[in-house]
Image (cartoon, rainbow, N blue to C red; front, side, top):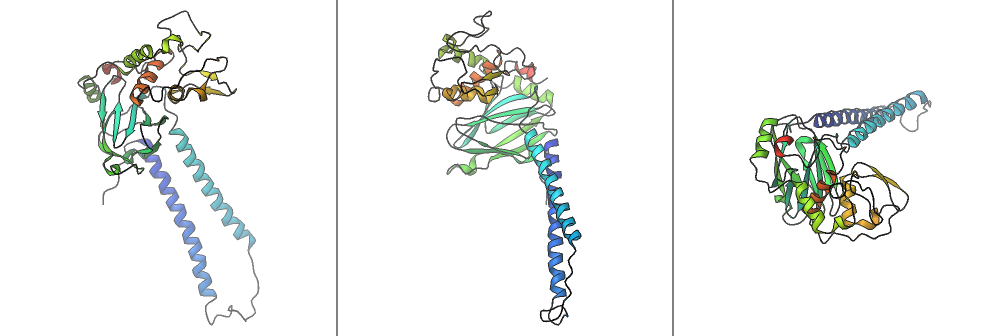
Length: 330
């Protein structure tokens, strides 16, 4: 029997958590069945404690309260531990490489910041945080990499995010773990974890027709976005106009929506604002932005999101989607 490899520190922590849960569960199971077996022996046929015989009632409240309280505290501790691991999985470091993953019956399409593309394959550098921005073009899928102990539903028209730092080089399989049609069993791929030099070399020798951000800039102009939204690239001295908010510095900022709620502008926000603008309309603007859900493909929306990120000067260079292939691997 071979154990499933754990190629990240997160995977190792998940294994420890599951091991702890297994040990505690077995301990509680042993206690319950032990008490049951003890009562079977004590109240067996012929025992003086069988029904009809006088039995002195004796109840130890301290014992009952004690073991109930201890198991409650232990399981609550496991819950807090698991919740913390879950939350950390959705808080990527600021220097994480962003890679776009799109599910489609029945394949995984992968886009890199430098414009490289793959199908059913994912190349990442060892020792470098990687954030996956995932969406679906059709039905609900589920992206799972068992060696990293990560999985998440991939929903149509929405971004889901996961991040990891692989610490072991090698080739590992990933899957769709949500039944999505007759070709579901074939919706698998390979994760290739390379050392940083090999990853930079792979990026440099993989064909790319322009960076993802450069494609997004073309789409920004072609679809008329620049007619309403000001960007520093076209109007350096402008901040906002009367029709729509400026894109300069928008990514990473806090904004107030029309319903009065405040939210942080991240990749998921930009994606949803493009495909479902009424739900994410900014306060102070009355112009109704049209939806681009049926106009742009998910690949094109990913390019637009990548471009809009480059308009925020506060984004670290290691995370910027506009860096070249060679820079990304350093």
